[in-house]
Image (tube, rainbow, N blue to C red; front, side, top):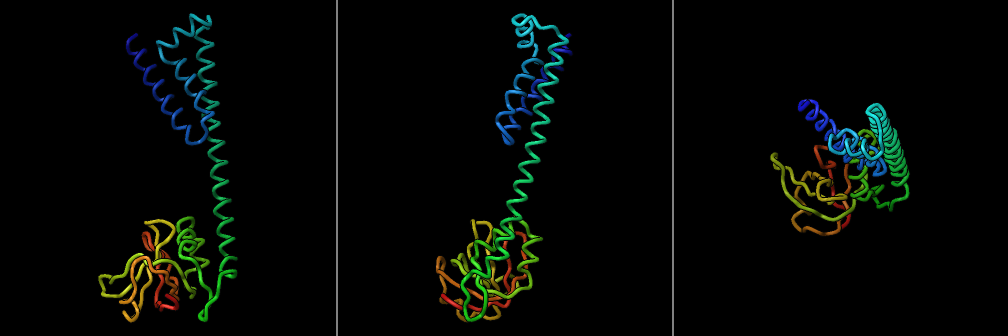
Length: 210
């Protein structure tokens, strides 16, 4: 008897955890899991039986129906959210394919805002590579830092859409970099080399405007 009670408590806790997890999908699913858990929990299950004069068979059936309804609801709503997110990402990528044509052009060619570039790579690196990798274009934004890598190659980092994702621009020489400072508005021109762990990489860069 005690073992059966412990098992019911464990199952009820599992159902409650499922219920709180469902909040991330939709809060309307939470009551289904809570009610299902209360029907399993020994203390509340006995109260329901006495109050509603509900047989064990009916309680089990209702508990299963509530849990399955919540579980199926989670699956369906999660899939809808995933599809919506995917469509939104694809739409943004399509917009970015057209956006460079609408950006201001300097004497070198197309100029892209650094934040737009990092957003593209964060959302879908494969799609962003098809659009940008190997292409030569300008990038404008604000200087985040200036330094050298382990191979003594000079670079500057242009701030992306947050403090993690940035555009790292490599230069063949240090000429012009010594006069730059953090927070300065800048525009560079170079070849996109894709993305490393976090930063979008631009190679063979030159400063076109500061």
